[in-house]
Image 1 (cartoon, rainbow, N blue to C red):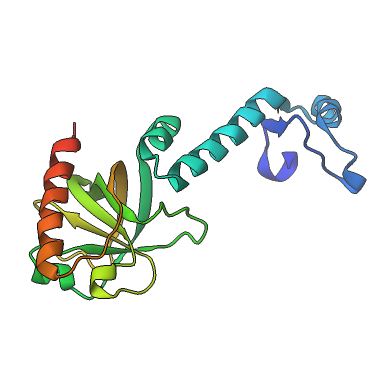
Image 2: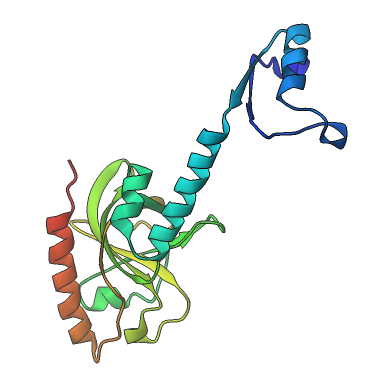
Length: 200
């Protein structure tokens, strides 16, 4: 590592082991650092445990639809990033076209089904949006979809990578008797999202 990567500093967890039979530890690196002239820093147990606890709390908050708590722990809105793909274009027929997001990261935690207020970044411009995560029961959808209606935006962005920032959980996903009933509810969701989200 010193010869090929020109390592200056190695940061190691308090319980990290390496080498044959995992005999190497922090003290081994300290001894080697004197011979090969690099620095060693150990992360104490308390810091590692705090990170692990925070990650667990964030995942639990997201799974329980406690988005405000998750965002507070993160210090920023929860982000879903992916590629915009073609959908059934049903939203377009009721005046609410959506960007359907294909999440690229297979390990990304998708929040529970529901409607979320937030904003998105598209080509370095920020827009308010309302996002639905779920199966779209009103139109007999299949599989979990992430789709966002972006306010004051009408460009074609198929194939573009965008990020959705989830700011506020609004309501559960539900099945409506008709597309007209769905449209009426989306109007309410849109008004809520616009009033709740700030781009400042």
